[in-house]
Amino acid sequence: MSLLTLHDLHKVYPNGTHALKGINLDVKEGEFLVVIGLSGSGKSTLLRCINRLIDPTSGSIRFAGKDVTQLSGAELRRYRAQIGMIFQHFNLINRHSVLHNVLYGALGRLPLLGPLLGHFPDELKVEARRHLTLVGLADKETNRVDALSGGQQQRVAIARSLMQHPRLLLADEPVASLDPATSHSVMQYLEKINKEQGTTIICNLHFLSLVRRYASRVIALRAGEMVFEGKPEDITEAWFKKIYGEDAEEVEIK
Amino acid sequence: MPKKSKSNKGERIRRTLRQWQARLIDVLLGTYLALLLHRIWYYHVILGTPPPPFDVGDFPLYLIIGGGIFLVLNFLKASPATLIHAHPEGRRRSIAVHLWWWIGISTILTGWIVTRVSVFDLFSTEGLQGARRIFSAIFSPDLSILWQGLTAIVETIYLAMMATLFAIPIAFILSFLAARNLMQHHPVARLIYSLTRLLINFTRSIEPLIWAIIFTVWVGIGPFAGMLALWVHTVASLTKLYSEQIENINPGPIEAIEATGARWIHVLWFAVVPQVLNPFMSFTIYRWDINVRMATVIGLVGGGGIGTLLMQYQGLALWHQVGTLVILIALVVWVMDYLSARIRAALA
Ligand SMILES: Nc1ncnc2c1ncn2[C@@H]1O[C@H](COP(=O)(O)OP(=O)(O)O)[C@@H](O)[C@H]1O
Ligand SMILES: [Mg+2]
Image 1 (tube, rainbow over the protein chains, first blue to last red):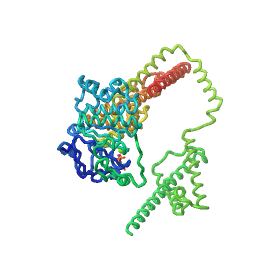
Image 2: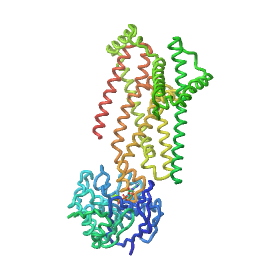
Image 3: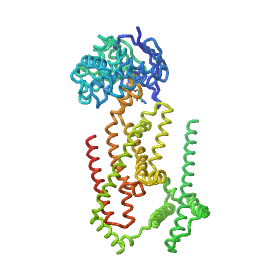
Image 4: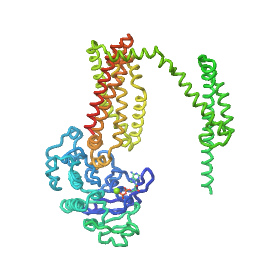
């Protein structure tokens, strides 16, 4: 069953940059879809359009059978709450504790006043601890997040997104600022969520070795256009040159 | 082909605009120089008497003579404004440069006369005696009014504190409205942003001293007027400092909290506020420190506290008492300065 359908999606930024030029994409429930492409090719723009952090200029987005292109206000928030997002720079709230950062993932379904007064229901805390255990950070819940390593911070971010009970997880170069070993560990957590909870994942990646290892399907963007769509093993040398340019060399990440 | 002629046309329009701009500048400069030559050089320097009061009716005369001559020079390409954007040679250049010198020297001379700078007064025997009197009095303070002075300066410190405290919540709210990065997503938001900025800049452009004069008329002489004056100015200053801080935050956490489907208020509270809280406290303490100093000055125009007391003793020429107060003020300002620096360092 298809979870997400993009139809002829365009994004033109106010400064005139045409970042997406008619993207058509169908994402099935349970896929691990990886988006590759040079930096500046439009990968981040694509993800931000999907959860409507930025508004596409034209085209349509369907999610779970519903057109979400024009949603606004409370409906838009309810839509976003179903989609987790993970960022290259983690984007945690630095001065706050690990547990609180995870709890903020539930803000989308909490009432107005409680969180402002620092009140989060006990059952949410129990749930947050469960997600922290899943990403191997059970003993860190009282630490300030800025005292953690990069890999640990990204795992906190994953736990935060799990608080949303996401049907879809967007990951924008989640391992681009991590070292190779840590990268694999973070990717394995995403894989685990994908396999065990059936959460659909769309992930922007840089390294082809990671793509081959984790993706169930790959698309490639080049200057805002989709230039490749297929299985990771279908990315041949020729395709590689087409996506990354003639001079590109493949780098391995073990 | 049509493209090229269009760009030529644009270039021509720009050149014409520049020409008219230069003519306007020359006319203004010529009028100005004519005014100074007549009223400063002719009366003050040559005749040695102040000129008669300025009559608006005379203005066209200065305009026609001074502006006219400069306009003619402009057409001859030997005027001051020509020098700015063109590179005249020889005689023309020399005339333009000379005129700039005349304008500059006349301006300084005018400043000298307007502020009545007199080296004679500064170093005359009488003047030096006065200076000695004040300084010796200040260094032999009358300690019998120490208690009175302390009471007044405590009033000043509290006044500054209240003005700062009352300013915090209002500045806090306004600063979000005055932060460009938070207010650019919607036309109505952009309008609110511009209006808030306008209000803040207007309020800030009026010095606390002038606010104090306004409020002494409004609510009467005393600490309340001083507090209100400081409060208004502090709201504006803190809003500006706060909002600049908000504009410099990392947008990443905002995106992350937004992506969870959180309400806008929650985004502000959890993604923006934690990033700005410490700098805000830092600014606020710095501002309190400034306010203690300003409260002293505001007291001079009737805003209460130690300034008002200082004014009274100064009016009675009781220099030993003035000395006590000056030392007290210096002490408090120094302590506040030190403490606020320490606290801010701890917050950083
Ligand atoms: N906020 C923005 N305003 C204007 N242009 C932008 C903005 N964000 C991205 N772009 C431009 O859009 C294009 C795609 O950027 P992005 O989606 O960030 O690419 P990627 O994530 O693949 O590196 C780039 O040319 C980039 O400069
Ligand atoms: Mg990117």
